[in-house]
Image (cartoon, rainbow, N blue to C red; front, side, top):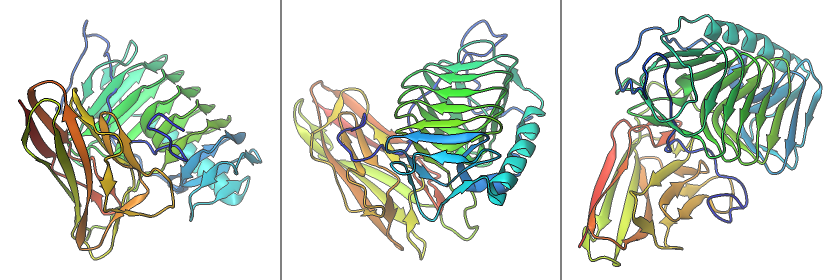
Length: 382
């Protein structure tokens, strides 16, 4: 059981919730929007890019964590708790072998690159409420996330965010990050001067490079990497999904569309929402992250009504999402080659109004890239 219902395993992180930031020197919440700052550059990852989880001393797991990407430890020798934890093939476990050692060496190189980038905006307080443009955000001490942060690429798929902190990174329960307007999880980096702790049910995006340790509390989910140089990585019923970053240049990005049928209903009536996922490539488009449609406030899913024609690939019970206010797929799905598939749900609203339902650019993440255009539909309730 997790927060989305009685699934047999946790959902993968979804890149469609909110997180927040308060920036120093402004006297109030700052929104930098899509106006990119200058300094942030994506480091060239080495062999650590194949790892979703890498510890220095140990990696320990409790519960049914699901890891997409290699898991390893070096110079420590212990990677424990698999099973019941599951490493999705073809990824494997590397404990104190040459692969893990080289990955740690490359992690150090990347960590130093991130720490050395010139800061654009100092952060002096808990992250809570902003939309941040690409750039380097820094704190000499710690960063804490207690709410919702939006990272806005402004239509630039190469936009990069670097978060530097001299000490700890800590998130509260239910904290989250959303990427919009073409933002790519491959280009979000968190350089942590000591240790990182992600609170329960945190929905986190980006690559964490920590000097010491990383702890994921129960049901925290990461779409990115958790890489600790010297200390332990501790997992507890988590999902860590290494994003697909090297999309073939010949790939055609998938597209999204959506509609309501009926487009106008009376209060308490029912309309069917249809989300269509299309793939113009000659090979299937495998979801590399979950697709989550957060319905506007007041619009609710009729329980048990969610259906999909998309193909489930990992034999996971409950791989489509059917809960009040949310509908979508986890990362266990694919779109057929040269074809499309749908997610449908009956929805209802008790109050009259105009309900605009939107999925942003980048919400559909696949091994052929992400959607570049948003998908919108409007339901009128009399």
